[in-house]
Image (cartoon, rainbow, N blue to C red; front, side, top):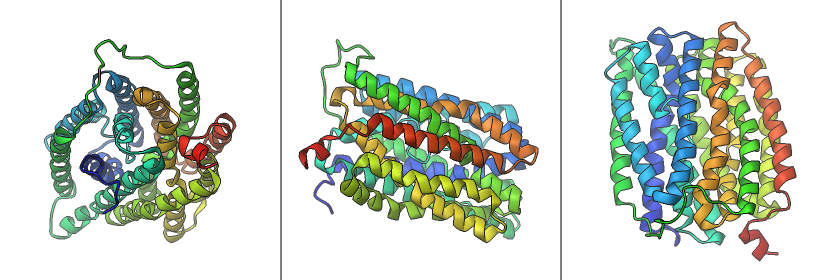
Amino acid sequence: MPQWMTREIALIILNRGLRSFIFGILFAVLAIYLSKVGMTSIQIGIVIALSGGTAAVWTLGGGLLADRYGRKKMLLAYGVAITASSACLLLTRDHVLLTTILSASALASFAPGGGPVVAAEQALLSDKVSSVRRTTVFAAISLVGSFATAIGAYSGAITTFLQGFGWNEIDSYEPLFVAMVVSALLSVAVALVIKEPPRNRQNRPIVVLSPRSKWVASRLFFTGVIDYAGTSLSGPFFAYWFYLRFDADPAFIGIIMGTNFLLATISYPIGVKLAQRFGVVRAIVGSRIPYVVLVMSLPFSPTLGIAAATYLLRGFVGIMDVPLRLSYTMGIIPSDERASVAAIGQFGRRAPTILSPIISGALLQIGLLFLPFASAGLLQLSEAGLFYKFFRKIKPPEEISST
């Protein structure tokens, strides 16, 4: 076991893994399940959009409150919310109730990166690791999260397996929802035993940022809006796109989604090496360019096999920057302001999910299967250029100390 793997770090990583398993299941099957219970593509887009709006509120409110009232409490609150909403998936197929339930908990926001409490999680984890080890630890938690997401996505194949034994098509999804409930309950249990250092927060306002942190937060917000305007046009619909374009069954789609996240376990260490060699900002921007090319070429894939390979390669090069961005933000922000700044940046990345999925749902329903991907690529390429412009001269402590 690595020297940096303390009990507290292990518990935070385990909590992420349990939440990520849930999102892996949803990423692979939710849009298809909603279509099976009678929702149209536009209705599915509305569910995802409303859930994305709630995720934005969770992200901003939870992050700002975390610096004032405690980061562990945010993990607990979200664990309770996803437990309740996962349980409700077992109890109703009513369109209005499903929309309300999924939206209230942000469960349909398709957030395999840790969900809307990632800002509180980032700050909590950063307090327990040195600057030199921070990027490595963030890569480790992202690796575990991606592995758990992969397992969740692979679980989508259970539906096809059960149908082969005579299960009703819709009923075959119920064991997945049971697994979500169990995982959510365990995430609450793990969060309960995480220890957070006591701080004197009684006289601290909910939002208090230094001028430098305000500058960083505003740039993270702006680039986040552009980046996730693109991500939310395509990301929530990858599984549904395979279903519409090639009539792929949930088992195959689950395998593709799972393999995508499994490949991330290889890409994260590569991202860390690139950051150590070229600097974290250059590594982030450099990984984005091939990702954009692959996203824009995906809808023109002539066969299911080529589409699957393109999708997997896209995921491999595009996801390695996730821990780099998280670690970089924590490195350039004072400890007491970390959750607040991360929340503002993450809010920018959540805000576009209020509208983009509705647009994509409408485009998919009228047969313009390529347009969400082309638009996503252009937006994300623009974000990479702006991120480099804003942050190329700002180095985290570990890069300053090594020069």
